[in-house]
Image (cartoon, rainbow, N blue to C red; front, side, top):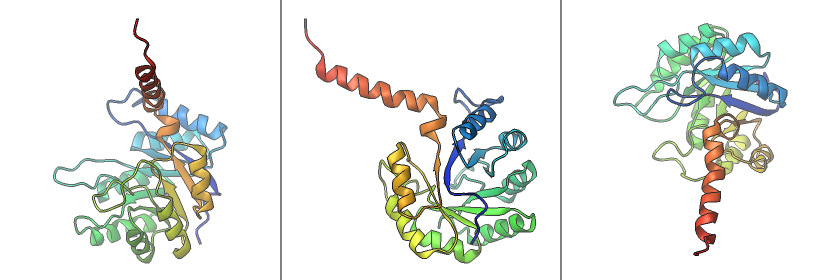
Length: 230
């Protein structure tokens, strides 16, 4: 079994184009802060952030590149071009979409072969139990629940898919990561108790606009419910 990353919290340091923290050294600083807070690994998007964080932060690094392709719903490291860029940037682990969409299995096998030939490990971002089993059979080193709730056929919900973690952990030999919709420490603990090797937390730590919104929306609702007419 692959045990490259010790058990614990991995922080996803990502800022998309148009978000306040996109560009510059913001994600490097975020990764450094995550390390100080006890994170055991970092997940990040884009060649520049992968390379910069790898230089500055001595933690295992999961890299990916998000790319929107017209007519396709697959956007996490979707083609060989992105895989090569992630490897070249220095990521230790390459994350990619391994959902059962758009008849991509042969493409995914080619991407996986390239990653392993480059001496890197590969992470399958999946949305269902069947996809996780399939990913292990293909030879992926890690399986993550990243895309649960983000495909049309997976379980939709506001919180993390703990049940998927439990099912995958009970069957797979490779480490299972919990990622997606983890907002509270109790949810991370529940994922570990369900068998997750690691829990990836992103927006709840590294996207301040969303963190702020969670507070302001709650306060605005309370004010609306408790307004006193003069």
